[in-house]
Every structure is written in structure tokens, then in C-alpha cells.
Length: 436
Image 1 (cartoon, helix red, strand yellow):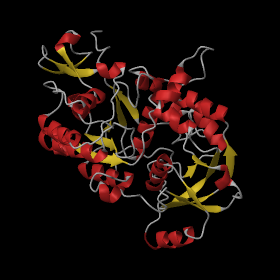
Image 2 (image 1 turned 180 degrees about the vertical axis):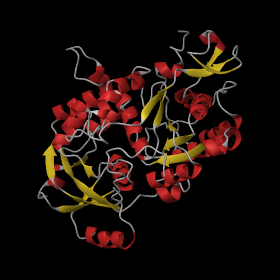
Image 3 (image 1 turned 90 degrees about the horizontal axis):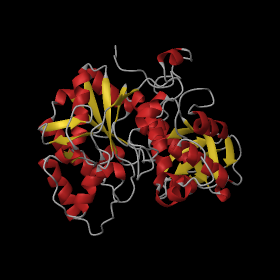
Image 4 (image 1 turned 90 degrees about the vertical axis):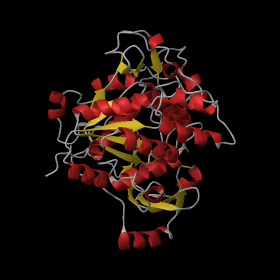
């Protein structure tokens, strides 16, 4: 019997990916349906619904769910869920679609991804989109008339830009997913469905498992976080985002090679698994940290490592805001969780770890909780800082990354014909890594 945490929602893995003859029949049917083009983010959401990664969700949200998720971080039935999962289309595409009608959802290149049975269509005004951005990316409405979040976010926050750039009409309804894109082939051995990862962990006899979320190259601080988790859990899943990122981020295939090398030379293989999942980053900071914990539960993981500026971008979030939000979510206490219907509370817990770095005086990796020295003694580590140094051809300080991984990353940057400026935010620069 599995020792792993059950999937979120109390319904097991809700899988809506069709395979075999059933998929072939559905593809023939989809070719006869009205075709609607979806965004890359919606493609990732579809695949996650298909493989059970978004259990219990198997549909794009209606307006009642959208509003409840934005405002309360629960679906309208009370199940915890931290970010909206919606499908937007143009007014022209929405025209003529009736409740109960089936449509085909396709990527920009025409690949049919799913059949959707439309149950509702609703228009979000610019003010409603703005309200969503405040709730999801800022955590509240405007604080005052001179609130500066909005102007800066429109210019510099990719998640806000994504929401405000959505088409005006949202379509809601259940989906039958027909494709996983190129993930199974391009990332063979790394891309894993929840059922596959659960089977692998069951075979190892794991019960208490931690996930390390990665979207940047894995440096010494990431390695240290993973090894802290290994010390207190049966194992750790180095779980990389292999969907789309913002310009200037390092492609997933390069990061995967670097992680493979790190695992090969510096981890005990019985206690680590490398895996990837197909979402795009939303850059929603604290709310995205909650999303990461929610779908990790579906993958069989019950501890989510939350470090500094988790899922952040620029200077939009406090360094440990993604840790603090776990204390404020619905059903945050065991007593509150027990009071709701089984499955509706989030069971994947946050594993909070302080700022980590290499300290010359400690002669090793340390954190603000363990190191008594000053920031002058520390090599401050961050993925953004590493990308900036590599992009500008700077020498990488000793103890910042493993040499074997840096060879792979330098090779990638040397092959670039166009370089994207990497902006340094406060957290990445190490400005706040002071003795407590």
C-alpha cells in the first residue's frame, strides 16, 4: 500500500487525457468542430488537467469559480485552489458558441489539444482583470490613491502583462485532453505524469517526500536546500518547470543537463529523483508557491521547499512572503482542515528554509539561522545573479556553482547570438543577506 499523500480534492487523480482508440476517435471528432486557438499558458494548464496534475480540476473555470479563487483561494465548492485556471478567446471566436456545444482547442500552429464542452461564457472587463491582478499578484486591492504597484506591474510584471493581455471572453467547461505536446519526447525520462512519479516513489518505499521547485540553473544554494530535505525526508524530487519562461531565462533542456550532471556527481541516487512538469511560469510569488504545493500533492509530494523569493520576479514580493502566505490560507491549521470535507484542504506542507549561502568563515554552506558571520564573509547565491554573470561573461565566484554544471551553462551562453539584459532585483543581489 502506498505511503504517499493522497491527491488533492479527495477524488484521486482526476485524469482527462484520452489515449489509444478513444483518443483517435476524439481526434476525428475534433476535426469537425469549431476550432479555438489557446495561449501557451492555457496549453500547459490543459496538459496538467489531462495527466491529473491539477486534480480535482478537469475544466476551465466559470465566473463563480474564477471570482471565488481570486477572492478566497477556494473553488465555489470550498476546495482549496490558489490561482484561476481560465481559457480566454476573442469576441469573434466566442460568437455563436452556445452552452453545451463542443469545440476544439488548438495551439497557434493548429495542433488540436483538447475537446471542450462549453458550459458558460463570460466577459471580463479591464477593471475585472485588474482586480484579478491585484488579488493574485499583489494579494489585495489598491491600498491607497497613490499605490504604485499598478504602473510598475504593467511595465515590468510578466504575470500581470499576461492577464491584461488575455482575450476578452472566457469559456468555461470540462475538457478531454488529446495531446501532451512534445514533452514526452523532448524531455523523455524527465517529464513524468503524477501516476508515473508516484509509482517510482512507491517502488523506492518513500512516504515523506519534498519537492524543490526550479526555474533557474541549479546552484550551490539549491543543492543545499535539496540536501536539507533529504536529511529529514525519504527523498527529494528536483522538480523543474519545463514550460515557457520570460526572455533571458535559461531553456529547460540546458537546465536539465546541468541538473543531471549535479545529481550524477553530488547526490545519493536512492534519495533523489529529477522530474519536470509542463506549466508556464505565472510569476505570482506567494500565490504561485501555493499552486506549486497544490499540484505537488497530486504528484505524491507532501513537503514543498519554500525558500527566498519563491516564484518571484523583480522586487514585487517580500523575500519570505511565499512562506508567510501558508499561514493565511483557508484551512491553514490542522483543526480547520479537519472541519472541512476530506480532500478540500491542502495537505502538502511548506518546508521553510532561510536564506542560504556559502560562508568562508564557516567553511561551508550555511543559512542566516546557522551562520554568525557578516555578509562580507558570504558568497551570496541566486539564479538571477548567476544568469547575469554568465550573460556578461563575468568570472563566477568560487563556491557559487559546481564546475561541471558551469561548463554546460557557459557553453550555452557562448552559443547565443542575441543576449537579453538580466535585471538584478534586491533579493538576487544579496542586499538583505545580513546577520539577523
